[in-house]
Length: 168
Image 1 (cartoon, helix red, strand yellow):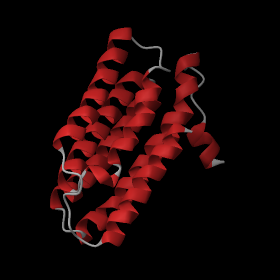
Image 2 (tube, rainbow, N blue to C red):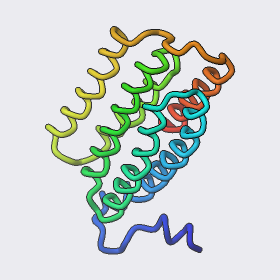
Image 3 (tube, rainbow, N blue to C red):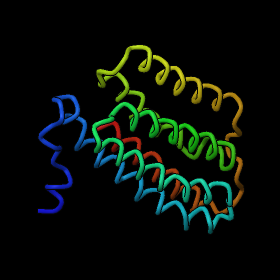
Image 4 (cartoon, rainbow, N blue to C red):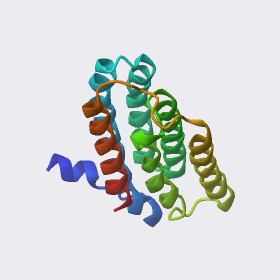
């Protein structure tokens, strides 16, 4: 009953807000869980910048969920997109392009065009995400972390799985 209440949008929401309420609630909850998972992995890998980012990302996702649940979907989505871009940049420069973090940008990029908010906001978000991926492709190292290959593979599986889940 609590899960259903958590996923049920308030009656006062517009059809657009209701449409994305459950989606953002589930997606943002998943992002919180993933960053909780990343914290011990990055600690073990001795990647302090990524550990600190994952710790800081949890309140960002909580705020995004809270703002979304208040009916401000575009604000929550913009905050979430910004966090995704920062995460991808940090991971690509600290671990490397081959870790697959850039794939996690596909779902937010596609979602941009499903929202009905201002066309200019859509374009700015889409261009920003595209530029992040293109610049990282040219400037990030392919593999910048030379630790345990099993850990690298675990992170690749997590990132690619998240991208796949996000797309579908």
